[in-house]
Image (cartoon, rainbow, N blue to C red; front, top):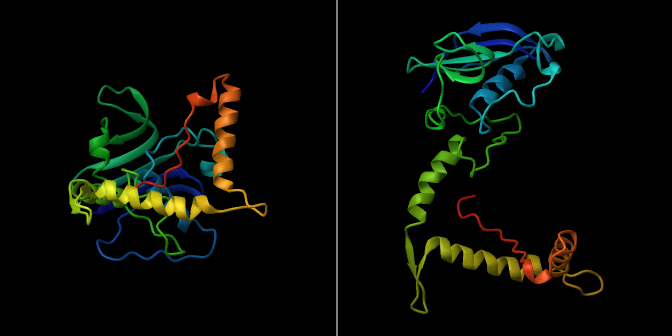
Length: 225
């Protein structure tokens, strides 16, 4: 799916911008601080891994910092739909709404997942796209891989048959215990064991409960991260 038109209003340094990108390669050229990055920030806000909203918007995110400059970001796609994030938009009954919509109508989580992108920053690293985030393109791909991974089994030398996630967990816990949890301070105390004990003791104290009611489990287990 490709973006066919980009429309941005009152976002940061952009008062009003609308253009039709090439279906091939697009290059943005300009001096520093002229707003190139703000175009990509706007697109990434709309299509990024975090569901877009205006909960944390500040006046400085609006053009000239004026509160009455309402932000609107609209991306048209080659499927005939547009995805819009607007502080004010009207539904089919002309009611004023705020937030995300698709072609002027309400949007579901399932539909939202069809519109995703990967944003590669100047440092050539994919920014903010945690693999376990289902809103990201990478997360959606890995979720499908994880479904297959979760069903496959491995025959062990001792005769056991383990699911791959169980084997992964078993091995990562051994790495955790042998490496991370074996770290000692200058007095020979095992730091992680002391750390877990402090968490358990302080949690019990603050909640006025016996320590036996608490169990601290620090796992590094995420088979597809």
